[in-house]
Length: 253
Image (cartoon, rainbow, N blue to C red; front, side):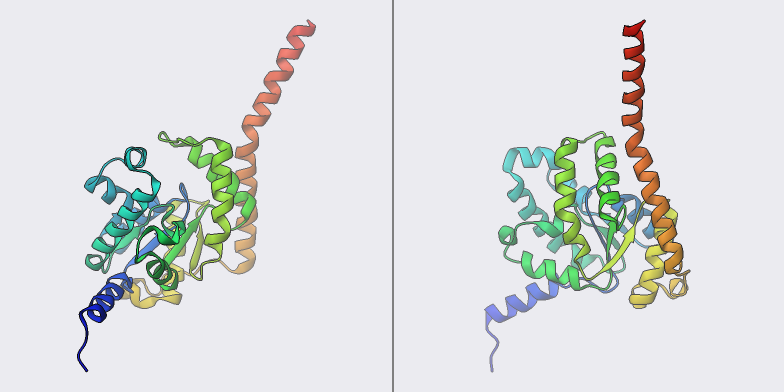
């Protein structure tokens, strides 16, 4: 039976959308550490590193300027097209995706739904989150986002965004790694999980890398991380309270 041109084009699109088993993809919300961890991971593996946001800016313009000029949906559509253009050339690489890439509207691009599903099925996709505890993740994400020099959204909007996206990322059937710790420790944890769940993605020398800590140790570390995040969050509030008390004393005097 002859194969139609439509069948061939569909097959080609499916091939392009299927992530290479040896391409490690980092996804997660803004300020999760994708760029920092991605570069460190690639350096440790001795492989190329690409950042989808930086690739977009090289080909188009500053992302915020592009969105201001053409709208968010046009940006998302162009970003998906860029992903499809780049990924066939990135086997054996680490790729950091844009923060909203996995939560674009389904109709943003004809290939997006299938592409999203392919990324979510890949055993070399890694979700990075400051913490796997919702409230700790919210507090730390907002703190990191507001500390960025290019921050555009206020605290209320940043909190709404991460609360909306947290469950979506946690619901993906992929590796999830906490980043509320030094980048070197995050890289070790990523390599350990990949070594267990997708060893073929790693060079042979890395397939026996150290495992994650035992569950009890992980719980202890998560508790410490939550305490650190809460302390950082409460410091400005405590400072405001002290300044208010000092002001009140001056008035009384």
